[in-house]
Length: 422
Image 1 (cartoon, one colour):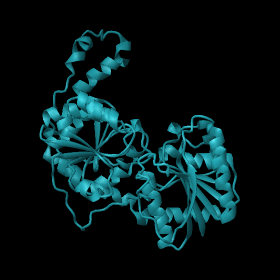
Image 2: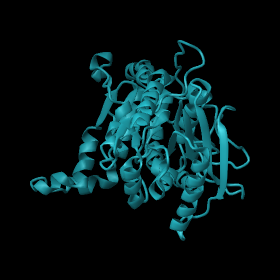
Image 3: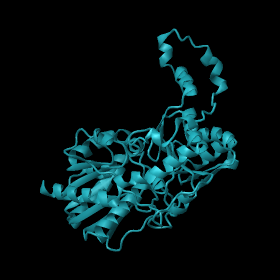
Image 4: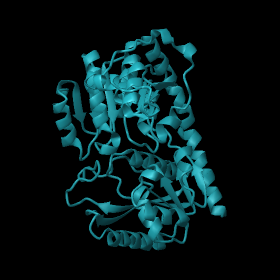
């Protein structure tokens, strides 16, 4: 089996690059597939891309058995004359595919949209959807890509339903790549809360910091550590200063030593506006670290899909924390509740969140609506109630059973077999 993977670059320390490197290595090392990794862009001019350090090379290990091709296209701003840049990329990739003559060509993310929408190839083609289709840029090219490829692979059932134009859609989730070094590892409580991901607007760190400014008033001896790189760093530092939480928040660079991060964490917080899947949820839960995630399409709600039986924790243990924002209280109390339209207003929803903080208790963590007060209350309830925390922590590793490498790799092998029969 000869497969070519087309990627922007492998020098980015991100979830996509991590899972792609793991799959590529496994296919080459364990199954003996003839794998070529074709990287399109170069940042050799010294400018850092999304989470990239040009001097570090590959962010994750790539097997020596994997063939490497680097086109070295300098990635410039795509705003001016971007269609001509796209055409150049698609033409150069097509020339390499003609030369390599693989059985299957696989790509993902924006680079996959570009190469599959503007060219057709003399091999089977697979687009991997690692970002919810509805949030992808260049929707006019998304439609062409969707119609051109032989199949689309999504990470979740929810995302699969959005690919209505695709010939075939397969759902194959990511597998977890991080596990404790010792069998039977049991997580020990600390007073460190972590968030992991690129420093970009999509990750919702402004929401997280606003929530943390309230959490820390109830848990002053806790600390929030955000691990990641990105263009929003300066803006987040300004917001941290504005909220006067500099003493309890650290912005730390992305790290390859995730083992140390999870071993020292009490909770993982996820506040993204959208998540294709979210490997960090699986990684944290593998270490018995409970997670609190905003309920967004589609990853978190499919990973945290199994509710924790109430028999494993007592609702009597819940200690509701008064979190009313008194700056809005007077306006809310003046609402005319005899008017039905008031029930649909934002102010009424705020009042509802004061009275009850809606979240769903699942094995390994909780899903919370995108509301600061609800998020704060969920975090505080977990940290202030030992029985609930213990139940979440002990149930967390079992979630990974559905996402083991041994469970997911056979799905890819079956897909390759099916697509070659077409």
